Image (cartoon, rainbow, N blue to C red; front, side):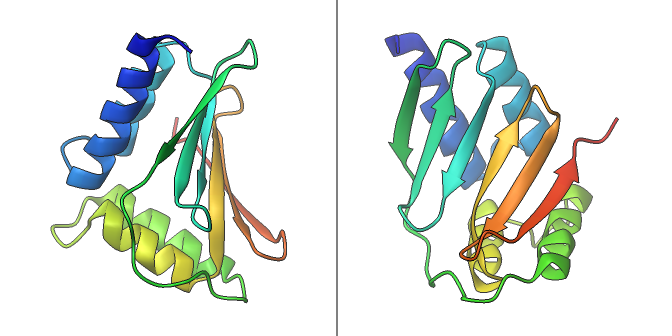
Amino acid sequence: MDAERISIAQSCLDAAHDGSLGFPAIVGKLIAARFEGYTVDYRRNTQTYYLPDGDSVALDMPHSDGITAATFDAAAIEGLVRWAQRGEPDYSYSGFCEKAKGAGCAGYLVSFLGRRVVYFGRTAETHIERFPE
């Protein structure tokens, strides 16, 4: 992957964690750079960004506390997504990550082509969120 795209992916990862960009803006930047999606892996603490030609880059995420709970709680994940969407003053992506892991989320796949996010647990249970229209 070329250095410019790696830089864009890193800047989006950093912006999510420092709160300087929200999910819609990050998605817009990544789509403009021709990414087709990315995966967050809480167990490896990485985000992997994918191009349509099969190329990818895995970047380390800042450390977040807690471990992924054994039981996946789809209702809790849905509640966390709504918390993020409301943009409440107490929201932070790091807080979202910690709470998601506590709700049994091992990671999630963001598909720009499919316009959805698939959250998954250690047992491969899932919760799907479609992008708002």
